[in-house]
Structures are given as structure tokens and as C-alpha cells.
Length: 484
Image 1 (tube, rainbow, N blue to C red):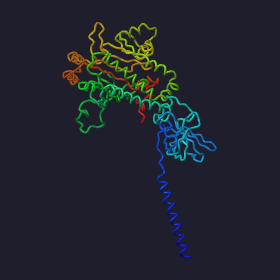
Image 2 (image 1 turned 120 degrees about the vertical axis):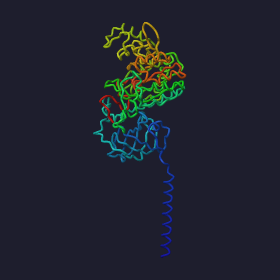
Image 3 (image 1 turned 45 degrees about the horizontal axis):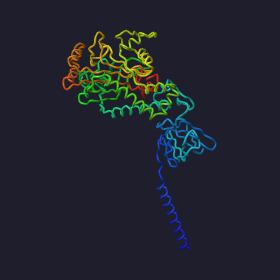
Image 4 (image 1 turned 135 degrees about the vertical axis):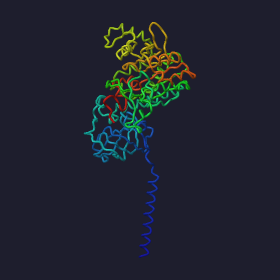
């Protein structure tokens, strides 16, 4: 009997071990779920696959036997529908909560979406109290409301769409310059030059100097950059086409819809040119190329703005792309303004600086499409603008691009390459010593050149129809406000 019992125990043990090994092999060989972004899942390319999706809950709809969720991870405007057994419901599964869902991707029987994820597991990664959460599940919040929550507004449809558009527009700008032979230059954020005439400056100094005898940390006054133009001019002595794309700063005490203390500029410089038309061609081509790219790659996000935020603006964008941009001189612009029946708040005499109200009127007068204004009064432009040497109205070879809804989008000029004229103007302004290095640029292999700057936030306002510049930048900085 002992031998029989031992034999039985031996068989049972062997069988148990075999089963354990079999289960281990099955678990080891079981395919790990493929991790997908929502934008990948909704294409239906992985139908039938075991997948894992991570994101945030945009809606929760529990039923008696089933649970329906919409999950979004910021990769697209469209959310992924998740279908699960009601047994997987969890009190922590609320609007705004972060989840990880594993299951099988299947074709959806509903017309509103082509695929759905049949969930096997739902894990709540991060809780969200829907009562305290400022954005509500069934409400459409306006830009003004979500602007109150700069740390949370990226979770709304409108602002997440804006950020995807902004990212794609950035890619489009870089692509345009790369395809057209421009070299990217990283111009400094801290600089000793003030790009004379560009705006108010933020001076940079540490709170305490190591040596109290030092007057300045950098030995000279240093500022946050208002423009990379002068640094690009340095580079244009060795490269025929250069550009920069980065943050710039203006210490303007304004909380208007048009002003930011920190914003992004696209700036370019072209060598071997004596024509404003060479500059306007780059401005127009870049505008068209970037806008067509954004419309092609962010169609759903742009449609959200054009349908729900700025209805009717798509027609304006289509008109801008369909028509060539006309050009008028500053003198012609003044004549147009003086002939109008509109009462302007600011004067329109020859020699005045064009104000936003003037710029918007000129755009409408020219068919509500972008328009170039050239040859501004010489005295309005900084020292580097090329002298047209014309009389009796003395002008500079400068140009602005005015666009619907915004006014000035781009500003540029041919640069004064004639050493004697440049030196005379710097002497007149008392800047010859400060800009002696700039005169050197004209002494060693100088060529006729010109360039321009484009306000990136204003560009986004233009193509989306957004009225307030604070709604097209992730973290707006303006006077008396610096949240985060």
C-alpha cells in the first residue's frame, strides 16, 4: 500500500508540474498588447489586434450590461470609443480621469465611428473629481472662459486643436525654409544690441553680482532679444539665405488683444538682392506653403475653429490662398485712407505711422486679402533700412504685409549696404560707436541684402480667425500677468 500511495503521489506531482510548465509557456507566449495612440487606433489599421490605449476620459456612459467610454490622448481631435462589460465600471472612472485600456480593436456597428475597442481591462491611472474640474462634460466652453485656466486649458477640444495646429505650422515653416535653401541660425536670446527701433526692452541682470565693482554681469547692458535680425545680418555675410525661429520679447505695458511680452518670430535674411519683390515673394510663398500644409495635415482641427469658434472664416482663408497678394506704396495707401468716408481715430497725413485701424481698412479696400505696403517714409524706419534717395517725399525700401483680421503680419526692408550712407545715419543718431561692428559688415565683402520678420502668433490668428492673441500661444505672457 505504501508503494501504491507513493506511485500515486509521484504521478500527481508530475502532472501538477507539467500543468504548471504548460501554463507558464502559455503566459510567456501570449502576445503583449500593441500600444497604440488614439490617432493610430481610429484609422482601423489594427482591426482584430490585442491593443493597449492610454489617455483621458472625455465621456462616460454606463448602462445596465455595458459601459461606454470615449478616450483621447491628444494625438487627434477624434476620440476612441471603448465598449466594456458593466463589471469593469469603477467609481473612479469619471470625466477627465486618466486610464489605461486593454482589449481587442474591432469594427464598430455604429455610423459615428468606424472602430471601437472592446475592453478586457480598464485601469484608472489618475483620478479626476468632475465636480471640481472647471470643464464640464456636456458644455462647450468659449476661449475667454478657458483662458482663465492656463494650466488646464490644453484638456479642452478647442485648445488641444490649437496646439496641434501650432505644432504643424511650426513644422511647415521649417520645411519651407529647408526646401528653399535657407540655413537655420540659432540667434541669442540674451544680447547687447537693442535692434534700434524694435520696441521696449527687458534688461537682464542677476540679482547680485559676484564682484560689486562690476557694473554689469556681461560687462555691457544686456537685454532679452526683440529681434534676431542683426545676428542674421552677420550670418548673411557668409550664407546667402538664413533664417531663425524663436522667442522674442517686448516690454510693452499693454494688456490688449494684440500684445504679448513673449512671442515667437520667424525671421529671414536674403543676400544678393536689390529688390523688395525678392522679399515679398518669400513672404507670400512661405505664407501659402505653411497654410496649405496646415489645412492638409490638420483638417479636423482647423474645421473645429472655422465651424464653432470663428464660423465663416474658412472663406477668408480660401480667398487668401486663391488670389495673389497685391502691392501698393505707402503714398498710395495714404491716398486711399484720405479718400475714404471712414472716421479714423488717428491722423492719416503723409509721414504718419499706419495704425491697426488703417491697416485693416486697407486690407478690406483691397478685397479682404493680404496686401503689401512698400516704400515707407524714411524717418519712420530704423537706421538699417535702405535709403531710396527719392524726393520730394523721402522714402526707405521697406515693406509690410497686412492681412485680414490682424493688420501687420510681416515687416521687412532692404538693408543699407552703402557704407557712407550707413555711417552718416549712425552718426546722426549718435550710434556709431555702439554699432561699429555693424559697419564692419559693410567693409568686408558686403553685398546688397534684405530681410523680414513674421509674428508667428499673428499668423495663427490670421488663418484661424482668432481675435485674441492670448488664445494662440500655450502660456501667454503680458504685463501684470505671468501665470506658471
